[in-house]
Image (cartoon, rainbow, N blue to C red; front, side, top):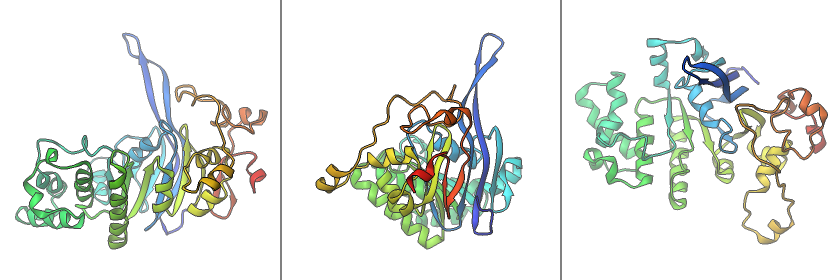
Length: 330
C-alpha cells in the first residue's frame, strides 16, 4: 500500500477480535475474528467502496477506523497521525475531522431531540461556534442537504426514511470534516430514494472536497459512486483495485462470484454470461479456515491454500489481490 502524501487515511495490519467469555469467572474461550489483518489506504478527495457479504467485517472496519471500537492490534494513520495511539482530548480533537453516516436512519437519531438539537449537538460538544449562532448554522446545514430550514423544530418521527438520512448527513457535515465513513447509508431506504441520497453525497463531495469510505452491499451503486473498490470476505480483503478494473477484469474468484450475481438490464447479455455459484456457507468467524479465508468455497482451491495465507500483493499497478493463482485470470 502507498504511504505517499496523497493518502489521507492509511490502515495497516488491522485486527479487531471480539472475545468470547464463558463460565462464572468469565474465562475467555475464544474470539470472533471480525477483522483479521487488513491494510489499505484512502486518497484525499476519493471514494473507496468497501463491499462484501454480511458478516465480512465491513462495518467493524469503519468503526475501528474512527476508534468507536478499539482495534486489537494494528495502526490507523489519519492525516499523518496514528489514531490508535491517541486517547482522551487528543482523540476527541481528531474526531472533528472524521464523521460517520450510520446505516439505520431510524435508530441513529435520538427520538427525544428535535432536528435542530440533533444537527447542532456536535457544534455544542466541540464548542466550535457561539450558542446564538448555532441555529443559523443548523439552518444552513439543512439547506445543504436539501431540507427546509423550518424543519429545525420537528422531531425524527415526523420525517420519512430518506429525510432522516439527510438529517444524518447534515449532522456529519456540522464540524466540516475531511473524511466521512458512509456505513451502508442507503440500504434501509426505498430504491427511489437511494439515488437521491447518493447524488447528494456526490454533490457534497465536490463542494467540500470530502473523502469517503463507502460501505455497501449494492455492487452497482458502489460502481457508480466509487473511485476504487475493496472486496472483503470473512475479515480479510480479497481484492482492491480501480473501479473499472475490478468490475471488468476481476482477478479473485470471490470477486468474480459477487459480480456474476449483479443483475444486468440486457436479457440477452445476461443469458450469455457465466454464473459463479458458490458452494457451502460462510465459515464462522469464531473458527475461520486456515490459510486462505475463501478456500472452503473457492472453485480453484488447492492444497497450498490451506497451508498458508496468500499475500495481499500488487499483481498489476494499483491492483492488489490475495490469491495464489490470480495470474490465471490475467
